[in-house]
Length: 590
Image (tube, rainbow, N blue to C red):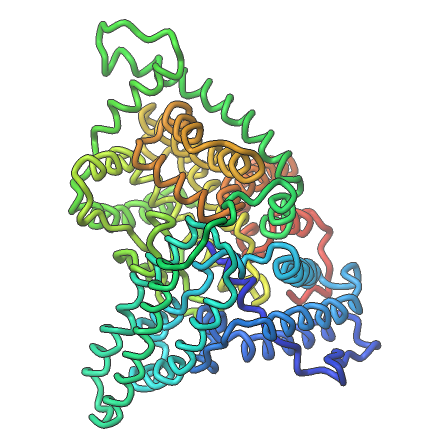
């Protein structure tokens, strides 16, 4: 679900429905909902023309054949675009708009300000080689069945024209890049090159495109694949004596947190809350471990140290796990079980017409998270939602065993709640039904991840796992993961936590397996702020839920909260809270 990095690179050039010098033509007499809605429509129309990769990802396929080359001129167009749109937004007073339009206004303003900040202050285009990667959008065109195969392949062919120029420009932009991000760029680009080098050719064989035309198309594919490989070679051989440190630093971190998370508090305040939450979880886990000790250790002496006690019990429970080659199939079997439980408890309405496909994680996505969801965009509501599962093929036996103990039989169920039902998959289906496209395309990661974490608690409170103390202990362990994600991310990027200190915290205080801890260190070294989205979003949603309950008469249904909350789309929780507790307006249209 890590899309904010892409958003900074995707906004381009100026809004064309403008007057001279890019000034938006707005009728001052239309500073109301109909006027704002028309402005949004024009905004999106031009946005997709100028952001073809992003458009493809959200299901808008008119510009699939375009690939823009990143350069200084493009960045200046992006800055101009942001200035023009901020000026246009300022003509609409949020308080005079409907609740839905007010949220859209806030989200658009935040995104445009974030764009300016990203170019002028963050400047990741200079130090993040992994931000240059074309294979994702090409894979989308190839794998999604939104149009006849021949049409998609011709768009694919046309889009390839700018690949050599794209990567040559990428090489020019980089200055003392982060070493960890350089390696990630090499791995992901080489991992995804097969989309162009082999998958494209395989798909051509299934068509009736004339042989001569296919030969021309394949020739361009070879040039494109060569350009991607050449970029990897360039990165491997790049002289980089003084690489930028992957740590953002406190000032940049707080700013990025403000724009990316859009929370009620600061990064520092969220970190402080996470530290306190960790203490609470340790107390609850110690209680459960003392309860379970006689069952699993008989008359053995119980450790006096609470962390050692918890660790011993968790380690014993973790021995129950699937085999490496059964990991994906085990996940597939969990989906109908979760669906049946939700229907039985009447927790939320599920849409059986929206397909969920469990698949091996594509190579171009590898290296960040072991499991993720790829959902169709708001323009492609009938498309597949993919549950991407990392493969253990080729892993050393010891590493695979460590990973499987982390994702043991208990945790695997919670993982599927988080990623699929009623977590990401369910939330994103609801988001695509929300009337505002703005809330989908500018979706708030903290709300999305926060809901997935909240949904785990929702299921546990409803009796998932038969309220077994083993299941509760493992959920606390899993929940501690979200909490420690925040502590880790802030401590590393706004502080100076070392790898050794991080691994110690994750293994000794979060009870994670060594392989999981090592993977998390890699993740925190190639991403920033995103790891805080889980706990931040959960904290705000849970607080909203508790406040909502106090306002309800006796006999309320949790289902009512869930469906009301999700109906607002992927908006920041603080804005959903305002809308849920606002007095209804008779003229609201969104």
